[in-house]
Length: 337
Ligand code: AOF
Ligand code: ZN
Image (cartoon, rainbow, N blue to C red; front, side):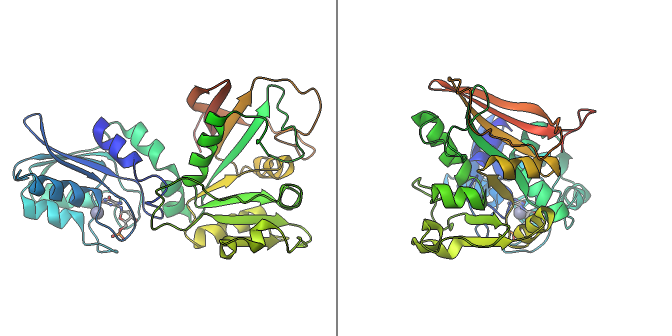
């Protein structure tokens, strides 16, 4: 299952609006085949693993399938995985988590068990869930998962007026920041940031084949933004959306309708503060840079009230001289979003 989780991770950034899923076929401790779900419309992870096994001359009959998400039992863009598993005569199916899609939700496992396949669920469930929080949120509520990103000094200041981290964070942090964009379907900024920074907000990493750039979304009270901004003039200008006077929950709902599973908020502090105050931030991705600025705008500018937001640490690492922290929002009882 650890191997299947690592495979699933390869689909981050391209599988959306589908979940990321990995699968490994095993018999007597030997890997027969493996695969992951690359992109909506392409085969699911289970089918990739089965076909990989056949290619290698290994027959899946009687084997055990480890898959990070419950196999599907309906025809979407692709045929049901359950049918293929039964046809191949796979003996055991072990899943990381049940598929939260209302069309599935345990029905795939029940169908397999009904046909005499041995099934087990929730192996490394926590890890499986952590990979697909955006999918779980979106498929069950229609709203995307919202990640607030910022790079700040040790005293929480972003230096420039906006979330611009160009001179604060080091090269390793900047690469990671691009990775965060890569994994997102939309990048959200405030109008002030758009005006002052004129950001491109594009993913500049190779290999994002077959996937368009993330939506570049600007929230603006007045709707008045200079026409010459890069967002309106560069080659991906068709991916820019401006929302004027939109309540934030409605804006998220609208993005969800467009197939956005994960939103990355990239400043400024006021937008981050408003989203946090309305309980709309699900996760923070913070780069802490080894300097104290003493003055300047804060990464989160609270709108007149104490936010008191709590997060559970999910990942922390050193990136050059910077510290990276990723945590998900929890309530006062410690329950996750
Ligand atoms: C699986 N294995 O690798 C994935 C699954 O339109 P489709 O046919 O691609 O189906 C999409 C749905 O299938 C998606 O909403 C989710 O419930 C499930 N994804 N299932 O068995 C996979 N990606
Ligand atoms: Zn499937």
